[in-house]
Image (tube, rainbow, N blue to C red; front, side, top):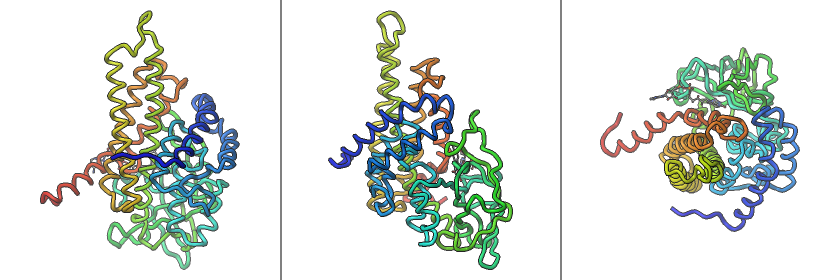
Length: 399
Ligand SMILES: Cc1cc2nc3c(=O)[nH]c(=O)nc-3n(C[C@H](O)[C@H](O)[C@H](O)COP(=O)(O)OP(=O)(O)OC[C@H]3O[C@@H](n4cnc5c(N)ncnc54)[C@H](O)[C@@H]3O)c2cc1C
């Protein structure tokens, strides 16, 4: 497996890396110490600069104002942007908006695209995705308590969700709700667009995550739908197609995440090496002369390089065969890359000692935030089970 970006892409990546280093990384101290809302106004100006440079929304089709990249090329971009926690946001390819834009572009009706996708693509509004519920295991996506009851030309939605990332300040959500409780499990739910100013919708709180409730885009909300009425034309795709759409959304989404994680690894690895090369453990003897530190550096490099190739291979498979043709690879990289990410961040933190625990570097931020990588978009165990089951089918094991 060998992958090289084209010359054109290489030049784009250079420009992106330069922007990240010169315009975004300098915002990190305030982001890390004062939170996302403190840097949001400056980030808005950076987003305009990105747009003026022609680097806006790399994955979006050109007719929607993006760069029209295929998944494989966007994977490299995602890695370059992942080197800072605000890279994807600045280039308008942040989760969960990126997934919502892809979904609406692929499956939205012309009316839905006009009303919801176009303002989102232009960056005028933000959005969120409400699937997970406090009362039901998110790892079983066909088991939901939220319902969308048919009432003439409308749906009336009732339910309780949480971990609705970026709901704070968003203009709309895509909610996963049961439209036919009697259908077979995978055909019970639909995805429905809900403006967040609709009567009956409420944001209960931004959930405090490891001590940080966050704010705006960088938050995870608990939300309620109490008799929220929307027209049936707000349903995306066919009735009962919610699960299928969720799967279609998550395949490429996992590449976005996994390559972003490789960008995080790249940055913390660099910080680890710099610290190892500069921190004297005794006069004249830097940490990098200690073999146990050298082992951490070698293990990290091996894990990052091998995982990166695997993620690129998966992106190529999705470009060629679609997300359903690369099911195994997608599940494998999801849990494997998340584990590598966690181990590399942990080693970088360890090498920094007490400094690693502070917010003077982004390592502690990622240590905290990216623990979730092993949980969201399918916990490790679920991916391991589904890959192993598919493998074992060839050996006659069918349970
Ligand atoms: C930071 C963050 C952001 C998120 N953003 C969103 C969002 O924007 N929208 C949204 O809808 N959701 C979001 N989520 C929710 C996420 O998708 C769910 O947390 C995830 O699907 C797991 O569901 P759960 O939390 O209910 O865990 P549960 O389903 O209760 O599972 C708990 C644990 O049980 C284990 N487990 C599960 N199944 C099995 C099994 N079959 N065998 C063995 N062990 C198993 C796993 O270790 C799992 O972590 C987010 C979560 C986090 C942490």
